[in-house]
Length: 361
Image (cartoon, rainbow, N blue to C red; front, side, top):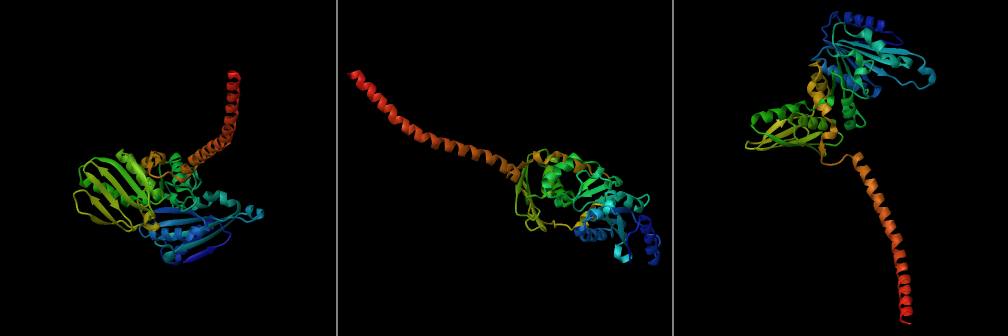
């Protein structure tokens, strides 16, 4: 069931939710949390679909906050709230409210969301795109016990990890970290099967993928060994190679779905390690609402402390400019000085001849 409300208020939205529940014959719904999705119109459909799929595991009230851009100065001064209330089959196993904010109310979204939160229930805020630099100090993020971002959607994903480390607050997490949960479980299980000492690690994956950096930082932080970050064509993470005193341990996934685990002295094993959908990632994050200390420790290790096999494009561009300029300057100076030396040589020889003849006379 869908109820459309134009130029409405939070109070009217609450009444529409009650009306919808009564209309479908379920006045009481057992929901465990409130999920607030802050997104734009372009990404709202995919985010809402993922949240509805995750609600089968975590029944929740989903509030989708869409901040619409005003095209004229007059529109920016006029505030308006449009809402779409969904209950029953149209909202998964919970309730969904799509809130579209116009004008000045865009800067005060928390005043609209606050009356719609479930009482005495945890609040999770998720930014599929355009996450704030400091989620905990964002007006909507301040309402939540758990704040979910996705560094992979940032323009500069790897550099974004540094900002996340600087502003980390207990309760922050990232879907780029959630994506590597199966990898971390598999690598930990592999190390449990053998008695060895890890000496070095190589993490291979596509460029500009923050999950690769997070996995490398986690390994470097937990194992206290050098970790090299190498590049591949993907998709995503492709391989982790751990050099130990008893031989190599390799987890290789070339096709994005099936991996091969190789341990020295044991037969190779095929391991299901597929790339998961966003709904599965959100469902995993909603299972626990306490601070993720392991994520915090890996994040604070720092991207700069890794040993990349290839320099980043920004780092490679800067040192090349200076040497080229110096070489050009040296070559120009050499070309300019060469004719002068050749021209000066005959003059010096002529002067020496004159001095010799004068001495003979």
